[in-house]
Image (cartoon, rainbow, N blue to C red; front, side):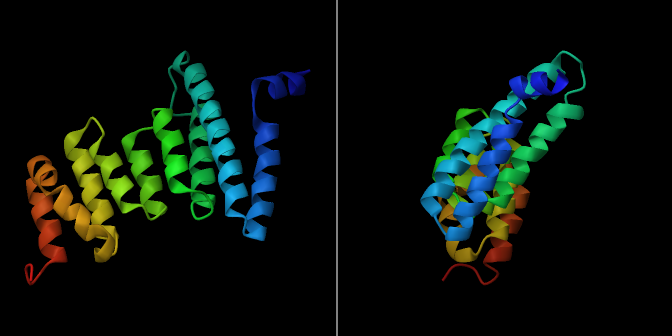
Length: 178
């Protein structure tokens, strides 16, 4: 009876099945199938996360138990298939579910989409920490990918985190601009 309740209130079985299918698609190098399955899995993980967060908000322990496990499962899914899924598709799903800017920025950076990572970091409500996250992404990225975003977001970065932005820029351009 407990197993039946668990299956009716969770997407765990479907997630396990689709995870098996995406591994097969990855083995075949089928990026289209990986993106379709990955998008579906991302939605399911987000539903699990939202359900766990709703359940834990009534217990006053949102950082433990099912809520923490659901967040961990989402992070594991995203990091496991970051190179196999289409980043704009996954970013759209994450943003559509209101996932925090820091998490979206982390996924975008891991996917190699420096621009989306910087935009996500800067779009959060905490302006200073968002700027620091954006600078972290820029510092960790190859200069060829980071340079246009240093220029595009220079004013925002300098206004929100002046010392960190100055240090970041100076470390990337020790001889100045040529």
